Picture 1 (cartoon, rainbow, N blue to C red):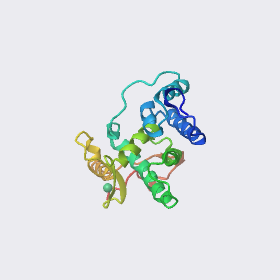
Picture 2 (picture 1 turned 45 degrees about the vertical axis):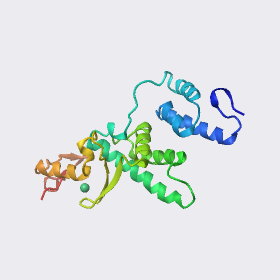
Picture 3 (picture 1 turned 180 degrees about the horizontal axis):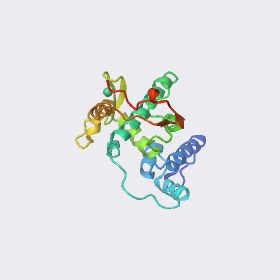
Length: 205
Ligand SMILES: [Zn+2]
């Protein structure tokens, strides 16, 4: 049995579960168009839900590729953290038959990332959704840098920002070295440190 505008009523509990996932995605700012593509809940229903959640219709362009919001090293480093969490979860859950396209796996990986990255230029769910989509399409790649032993995001796309061409962590280290000896801090977390023991922001030897 199919309800108005394509909503299948016969799928019972599965539909309710998918609707629940759709509401979580919409609440996180993922636009109805994208939610429709992964949940198959009708666009009409999703637009109505979006309106209920946000109080206004979903408007504006959505990025065709994740790298459109990965314009600087800080965002790129966050993307590497999120994708590292996601990739670790994919490996963990593969053994019990949960695939990388599983929407609950996406939501869980985002929750885990958000819980531990709060306050540090954290990416929002919508941004992580594009990363999740593009990582699986391989237009955004997670690479390991043998020099600094860290994961970083990489994109070969012609429009990708320069920060996605090489390791973002090595760039930060290089920039810090160029700045020369770091300034001394007078007071660290409210504790007055004796002159001889003043901590340095960076060691440059
Ligand atoms: Zn590196």
